[in-house]
Image 1: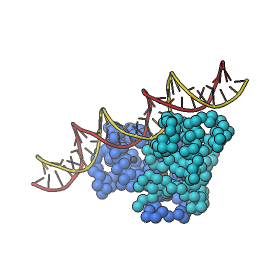
Image 2 (image 1 turned 180 degrees about the horizontal axis):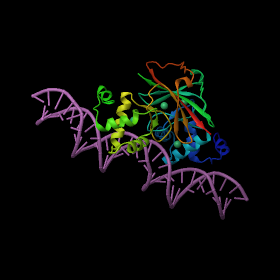
Image 3 (image 1 turned 45 degrees about the vertical axis):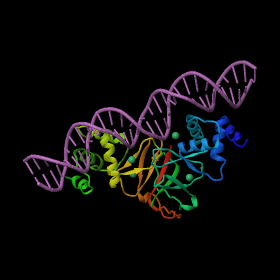
Image 4 (image 1 turned 60 degrees about the vertical axis):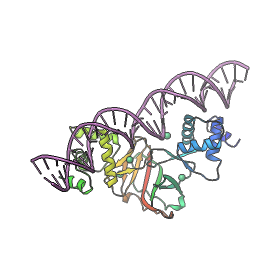
Length: 132
Length: 132
DNA sequence: CAGCTATTTAGAACCATTATAAACTGCAGA
DNA sequence: TCTGCAGTTTATAATGGTTCTAAATAGCTG
Ligand SMILES: [Mn+2]
Ligand SMILES: [Mn+2]
Ligand SMILES: [Zn+2]
Ligand SMILES: [Zn+2]
């Protein structure tokens, strides 16, 4: 029930697979960051049937396009996603490749003084790399 | 001459290939951003002999490790590098995948209020995505 | 229920990057 | 200058995350 309307309202059919992925992604206490591999594992742990990797990719991209997920710019061979879609920034722990949210209040206002003709700012993302 | 000492002082042998790559990367009016593919093309255009792709990768990684190049965090299937190793930020033009430098003076000071125990901040990078 | 389209799926393909291992080369010491 | 060796280059293969393909399946509308 919970996610059926969300999906329908987005023009996405509420399939069994998408609903299960919604459970894993959104029915949580806290938001979290993930790679596709990590999500695949999480799905295996939480549900009994199998969801193909292609469907996981399809669904993540569909959700991203609808704004239910964000991609985070990091230097990694894997793509990082975020279920926290509010405006916020990140610590990136180089040691283990984990991301930590910096809430908006953790970072002073970002003031971009330069403008590019004919272009609009779509997002401003700060990545703070951490080492020991 | 110009780059022989730079390399030797870094513990890198000044080979013909490395010196030629230095010319392409550093003997320029302006700094620039590049992917490995773009660099490979630039090298082909500027020198007569062939440098293998493996050597280009090896050299770029060696130079990055020595701090002569920086990697820029973007969401792309290719890795972006920067010959501008000063502290600065970037516009990322989503339309064509090109980066534009934001000089330090173009961005107000970034104030990270939160600390992580036992971790030091290695870098702070701002990516401003641009759309039409 | 029928028909249509969206979705799922296994597997192949893609492609940037890294690994391999043999040939080559810069250089320190003789 | 010659020798020997570690460092480097190279062609090529392997890796691995991601995307593509096309056939099977499942929602949805009438
Ligand atoms: Mn994507
Ligand atoms: Mn690298
Ligand atoms: Zn986050
Ligand atoms: Zn730059």
